[in-house]
Image: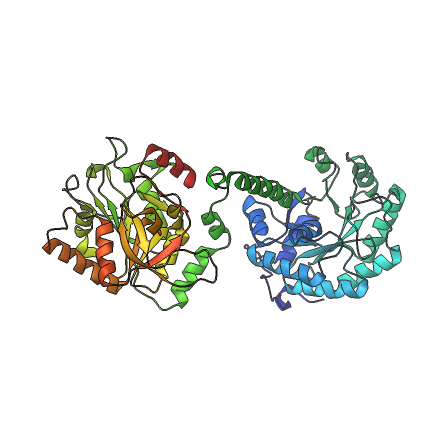
Length: 547
């Protein structure tokens, strides 16, 4: 046998956060005189959730790993497919993993190859059960046939002889009680497996109470650590397991089961409503997914390894009045944060940190740390183009322009930032069939949204206004646009042209963008929802669900 330092790790590192190897960490948990807990996971993201919950080890369940692949728990997933899933889990979390190895995927030869491959990936231990290959789940049927004791002991010895780290843990799972063979047979098998080299014994029962487990534990008398899976006898107080000297409890399948219940409810609601309104506020945010999978680390790596490019700036037009007399719209509370705070937060998450806000109505209450404030003192009489002109000196290089009363998913902003166009505007195609009354940001483009995945023909703005006939509407501008460095120059030139023509003071953004489209290509990026313009109290209520 080798040691951790000599293991050839292709997947997750063999070391945990504390510097202790994962092999040693699992052995410590199994051998500890105090009760330990392993939580089920079946893929990379569930492994990360187990770690964040505070558990010190993961049970890679055969049942849930198979089910997550849409397969039965009957060795329908090959051992190489299981290895692939385990590698993702080991990469996602630093915790030690005890994998449900079923029967070892065959005879002694399969077991020793499986153990070698587990060690290469930093998987800290395996549990194998004394049944025949291909296995049948323990809760299906009665009197399942068991492996010959001597043959199964050979599997155990082969596994221990093949481990690449002295701390690798092999748990032998005794199925005698499950198959109706009785207590004496369970004890006989456990003792034989212990003598063959098993580091711990998992005693399994499907009775609704823990009477068999306590009887076995009393007679076993701590000859080796005892592991249990209380799926059926879940109502037994955990303290009784401590008193019985149980080493480790495995919570075997509850993350997958809870996710099935949640997914079923969410899918049913969306199907019934043909809308996301009822579910959007009750599911995990996309930001949470990004956090779990480590997007922040990727962004840091990009800063380290990719050529640096000038960061984009942003101008937020927030001079308009509010829904109430005492507060500008941009300062409305959205779950403990102002609308402006949430908007600036989205900008910063996408790397847009140099933000300028043009304020006007009740400007004294419009404040946000780290944001440049400019004032439009003529907000009551002048339009948005005038507000934008107040910030013309900061429109240098790549620039985002956004209304101060909109919310949008980050992917929309990221899509604009990665566009090769010099000017690109975000347009919601849902307005084609459901134009909102009184909207003046309706769009006509030279190419309408088709919904065809293979349709990559670019669309360009022809006109933006409020009086576009229904049959000519391509969508609604979402109050979000991006200008490249060259596009920013064109924007400043157009502001100057409107000023010279006496149109700037009363001009709005639709007029400004329409004029730009008459001189330069203005790319239209189509989206289907996932944004909100806060114009009414109803919009405000929806905004509190949007986030």
